Length: 165
Image 1 (cartoon, rainbow, N blue to C red):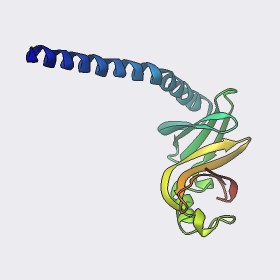
Image 2 (cartoon, rainbow, N blue to C red; image 1 turned 60 degrees about the vertical axis):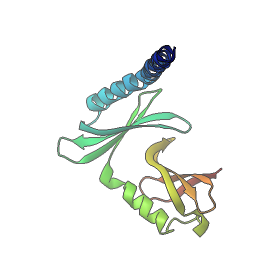
Image 3 (cartoon, rainbow, N blue to C red; image 1 turned 90 degrees about the vertical axis):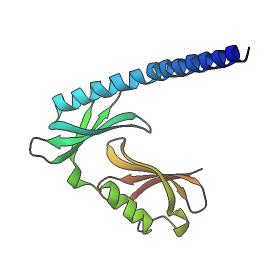
Image 4 (cartoon, rainbow, N blue to C red; image 1 turned 30 degrees about the vertical axis):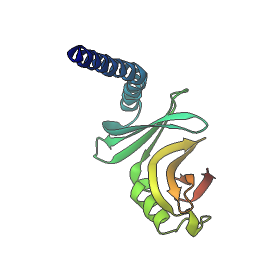
């Protein structure tokens, strides 16, 4: 009797693991397919030849942000509007790096932020777009344990918007 209970529990566990795998695969397939579509679009319509990373960003509009290099080996960023498929391409060196943004926040060098706004724990830092302006979106836990979203100008690092939850 004990043997059948163990076999039954193992069988149910295996079925659950397989079901979770199938659900996960079906849930992520559209994102992976869209990502591949936008990588191809970036290669065809911009000067990017090698892809390093792709992020998805949503604020007012949704964008795929493709980071890579051009034929000269320069780092390039391509923002692609998900709906209109319009591209905005910029050399990475023309804007602030992720490290520069994080350093400025850690040292409280961003005008409009107080010492209580300094990050305690970063959730993520990624590129995005607001209307026609490239931005950095920084999500973190601040000194008051609030979930904070900062939107900073890609070129200057100046504060654009701040939300606390």
